[in-house]
Amino acid sequence: MSETLLTARQLTRRFGGLAAVNEVTLDLWRDRIHAVIGPNGAGKSTLTNLLSGDIAPTTGTVTLAGRDVTGWSPERISRAGLGRSYQKTNIFPPFTVWENVRLAAQSRTPHAARWLARAAGVRAANERAERALELAGLQARRDHLAGAASHGEQRQLEIAMTLATDPQVLLLDEPLAGMGTAEAERMVELLLRLKKDHAMMLVEHDMDAVFTLADHLTVMVNGQVIASGTPTAVRGDAAVQSAYLGEEAHG
Ligand SMILES: Nc1ncnc2c1ncn2[C@@H]1O[C@H](COP(=O)(O)OP(=O)(O)OP(=O)(O)O)[C@@H](O)[C@H]1O
Image 1 (tube, helix red, strand yellow):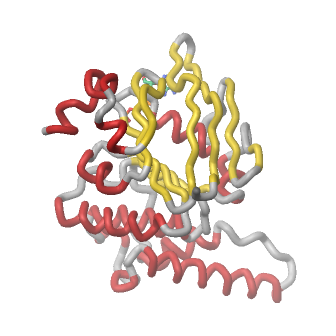
Image 2 (cartoon, rainbow, N blue to C red):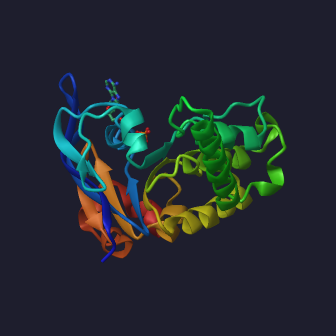
């Protein structure tokens, strides 16, 4: 059994009378991809925001690498080992690919008063950035302007920037959105590489990618989990078939 790196227990977030996320319990494990799917408005983005600390839960708990991080700021949760990418690209277009990754790595370096400690921090940030660039397969593009990169490369860059903060847990929000077939294939390969050593939650509408990548699949509808298990088990679940998956899973 893989190591559990993140657990959410009975997580609920209300907006006025609406429970956008309603008593959701899930685990993320090292070396495994946990895909979360559901129709528009099911609560997937809200769930991601709850796990990353971008919004606070109304009730419930989030545990990261054994620590209760419920109510922590996104910055503190990020430092505790959680990295997330956003649906909208988050890069600095006038900077090169390398500069973008380097800036993300630098954000993880504590301020040091002594120059020797500062120099060590710069070296460590450079090493983190190099590793992230290589893992994301972007070395050949390092000196290109981020703004001139293709849509697919920009999404890869966003993931490289997340990796540069050295996360153990990755939350990826629709990494394949807007991609053509070749770009999507490259991204699927990248996500399979990242599975090693990371626990990953993948929110994605591309069902081919989901069924290629997911080790575990959770289906949300109206803020609630209606099924969770292996992709094969979830695909055969009668409630999932009628509520959501039917056509895509068999189309
Ligand atoms: N800040 C907010 N204030 C009020 N309602 C919100 C807020 N954020 C989300 N909601 C509502 O919560 C529900 C869940 O939204 P959410 O964006 O989490 O769904 P989703 O599954 O991510 O959808 P999509 O696939 O379209 O991104 C929706 O009904 C949405 O309108």
